[in-house]
Image 1 (tube, helix red, strand yellow):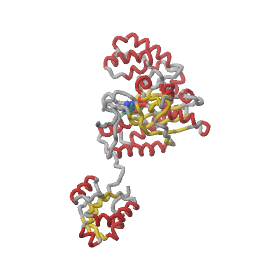
Image 2 (cartoon, helix red, strand yellow):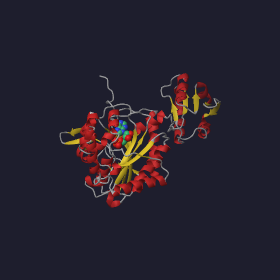
Image 3 (cartoon, rainbow, N blue to C red):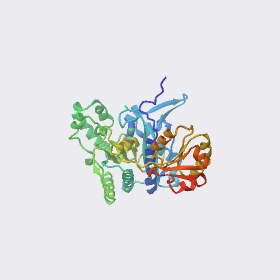
Image 4 (cartoon, rainbow, N blue to C red):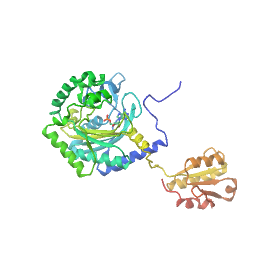
Length: 422
Ligand code: AMP
């Protein structure tokens, strides 16, 4: 039996994990500057949470959820997205009673049973943000500004921020009816998926990648002609706040959202580098969701970034990401005696916050030096029989290739000022 990871789910091994650590720590630093704090919710939730929030007729709920019956008792689902769990936690802990404004971010795996391809997986990771309790367009703009700040800080270039308003429960039905009417007139040119969407979730046809569908949609009505006054004012407010903070964006009235709970502001960050899987981030406003999930009438706005896609894009840009740990000091030790003698020095250096590596099994000097090279060691400390007899070590500076003898008693002090702490 050959054991492999589940299709569409991937292992993350070093050194790639260092990039993830960088992304995560940048997230904490940037979001912290805007007063957001981390929230962690369970990976498994009760299935009805997603059916109620994401929407019965969405692809996600209809086809993509990993749901199982727990010991014959209740249906549980591996979370396919982060907003519903966060809102569930917000309501369950009556957060609104303690603070009118809740500002959360999260990082974690999500699960969707999609057809795997480059940039689309069954387990993937999202960085998400939820701002609960603020209805003003300033809140939408703040989320977007913070998103742009984060993407810039990790080094992302060549992306487009696109914004739209998808209307509200008041004005969207009129638009959907008009759009459906139009779609019926071009139904013969649409793919099977779009004909299905046309009935259930007409705005989603704009997401279709099929050329024939895109062509058929050229003259489709767009939402801005149907906005009610509040939606129109809200959208202007968001754009003005973005302008005031120097954020560059494109208005795209064809942005829809795959999940039912969105209203008004919808935004995406897209790239043209990756082909079909070009969305890095999706977000928007969801004012009715807290109430739908049993809480008080509370406004909400948020976004989710796909971490795998972000990293793919950084790689395509050849963006060098900082390495999380400092180069190590490598102890190349020859013989049992040398290794025993080195033990207290290893401990002392680590207590000084140095990164220290050595070979447990006593391989040849050549293979130890090779490993030191591979680990990009700053210094190699060599102790063989000769050195052991003299109670001194040869310290080799790997950058200058200079080598000097240092007595054991002075080794820690000697190295203290040399390599940087991790
Ligand atoms: P959504 O929650 O559908 O709005 O998705 C937000 C972001 O998560 C997208 O812009 C993608 O970057 C990422 N994403 C969504 N689904 C997948 C998937 N199956 N595999 C990888 N990334 C995904």
